[in-house]
Image (tube, rainbow, N blue to C red; front, side, top):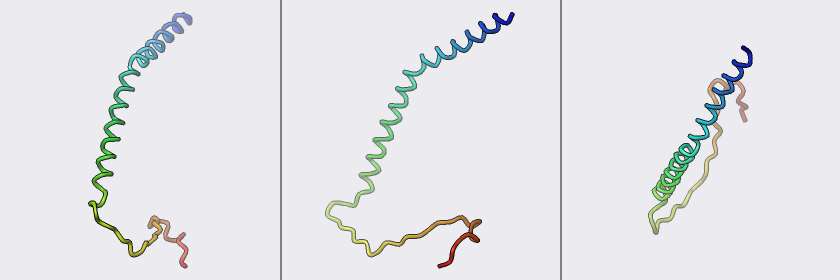
Length: 79
């Protein structure tokens, strides 16, 4: 009886593993297509965010800020 349960469990597990292995090429193919789409979108967004040719940007200053949660206001150090 115990051996039969082990055999049934082994058959189910090995069947699931084989199903997964059969699906891996499809999964890899799908992941490649997703990554290709991400690269194309990143390239498009990069090009769209560039200033027009012949323009020059001058920054007057930088301002650094620190963001904190309102709940942590008691931990904020006043300078």
